[in-house]
Amino acid sequence: MMPMDAVSGTAFQARVERESQESAFRVYDVTILEPLQFTADTGVSANQTRRFVVRAACRTRLTQNQEYLLMGRDGETRDSEGRPQYLLDLNTWVEELPEPKRCGATKNRNRCIDLRDFMSGFAENGCRI
Image 1 (cartoon, rainbow, N blue to C red):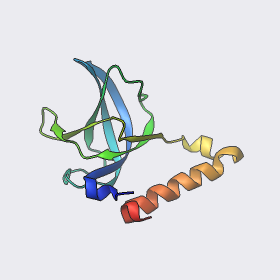
Image 2 (image 1 turned 180 degrees about the vertical axis):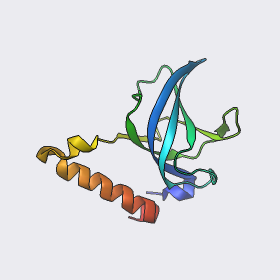
Image 3 (image 1 turned 180 degrees about the horizontal axis):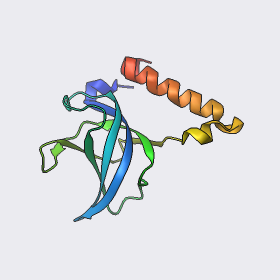
C-alpha cells in the first residue's frame, strides 16, 4: 500500500454542521475537530470549517451534528473563500464516530478503544502505524 502522504492525503476528525445542494453535488460544511494528517491544506486547524462535496447521485450521506473520521486525498478545488474543499469519492474513507455514551456499552467498548488508538497512532505516524 502506498503511504497516504505520498498521494497528498488528509485525515480529519470532523463534525457535520450543515448540508446543502449545489448543482449536481451535495455539499457538507464540517468543523474540523482535529486535523490528523494534511499536506496541501497547511492552514487547517481545529475549529475551522471545510467543505466536503459528493456527487448527488452517490449514496454517500453524512448526518448533521454527527462526527466522522474522513480520510482521503487533499482538496484539489477551492471554496469561495479560497479554502481547499474535498471530494468524497471512492478513494475516501468515511467512518462514523460513535458517541461517547455508545462507547460505554460493553459490546462497543473494544471497537471504540481500537478506533481511538488508530486515530491517535495515525495522527502521530501517518500510514506507518
